[in-house]
Image (tube, rainbow, N blue to C red; front, side, top):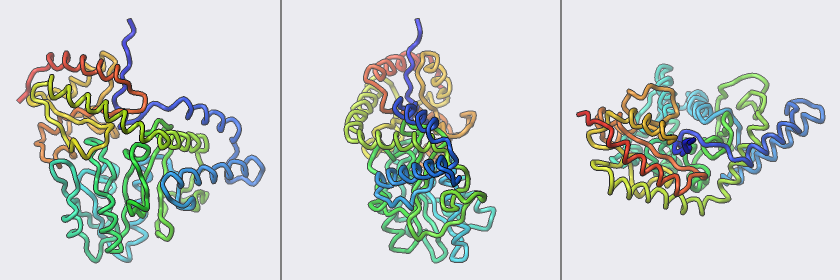
Length: 386
């Protein structure tokens, strides 16, 4: 009998919505011209990109001219940090980020330190919430940028970005937020947040891989990473991935249209998982806030079995269940402890054992029940490692 596929790793990536694939196929067939070309096919492609820019801007409460399409969330985050750092270097050389940012932010920050910039890493509490008092104290006369993610990719904690935006605005400092995990799942409004730059991408919301966007508020001076044909007003040279952009916008429109009902539906699945784990798995403990987290995320450890996280993942995979033992957004062997779990107070041993279950639009209650049944069975096969 063919095993069922239960995909519970939606924070890593999502399966594309069939409607998204349909739109991408149509646009790929009909609008294959280079948007920089002056002939009719090029003009049609350029006009369509502008229409898509209007649509994505409306979903963010932004202006169309503030949207710049890129190839990934990682690229957008690199562009935000490096672009601001080098454009604003004459004003200061200090950047503030949280200790639980995605690797592409943290590694960019480390790289900037090798180029003469100073970086302060702001701590979080045991729930993963950024210490805004520490953040405000860290800001100095030479601070040019603060970058704090909207929702953490590992533990799902929703950060106080609106408060952080107000702090930055009062100190006349640019604020960037990585919203790849939140966009399309909860409300993301650049003006409500107070963001000067904000990253979103497609493949976290049942869209295609290889396409994302960076919101850059009008008037923000930024240095491009790529130099070449001058696409995206010179901020991101590269021939635009029009089918990808089409899929991105379709995925975003669907996600935002069903957001409210999805929050309720996914919250009930999350509650089902949490309640079952609490009642049927001895020694389970949860990472991150149980109240202030994305409804799509559950991150937990099992006391004494933290060293068996990878084995549990493989045992579940044998039954067709896909979960993650880390962020799954970087290629690693799983042996390194999570910097996020260590930041919320877990020791290195515990931080290797985080299990992340992340939900998407196509997950059903039957799938969750199957997962919980198999999980209980597989946990019994694990041997405590202390």
